[in-house]
Image (cartoon, rainbow, N blue to C red; front, side, top):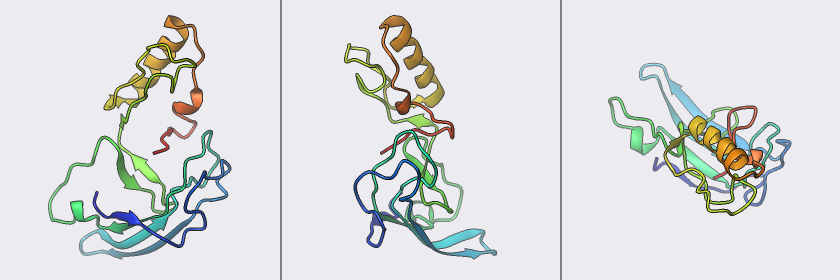
Amino acid sequence: GTGSVAATGCTLSSGTCAADGASSFCTRDLTYDAATGKLSGSITSNLCQSSVVARAPTADCVKQTFPDPTFAALGAKAVPILGRAAMALKTGVNVYGPLDAGFTDGQVCSGTDGIVDCVGGTDLTVCEETMQYQCKTVAGQTVNSGMLMDACGGHAMP
């Protein structure tokens, strides 16, 4: 949505997040309205995971307002299926929709061999199974597992 802006005050604002979750930063200034069932306020986060990850993301200090102006009007709204769909209230990390942003040649397979990995908009499970097959069976290469789903079902590092 349109409610995310660059922020200051994060303990780590740029560079690589710690793979053990130690650099996670999140502050919340939220109020719940029982009459509407909506939260209002903001979350400031550096988008670093708060738990161990196979591939540490890049820190980016952002402030997300609630409700996001894109979804503030009354009535049902569709959740994005590609890119960020939500933000975790406890940790301030991105929650992504079910479709992948895509991989380019060489990101998942061990070599650049013309295997076009997954195009954007592919279901995550379909993408992962396709890459496992193409890399190992077709090209005889190893799979960069860090690019695929981790134990928590995530992999994104946008």
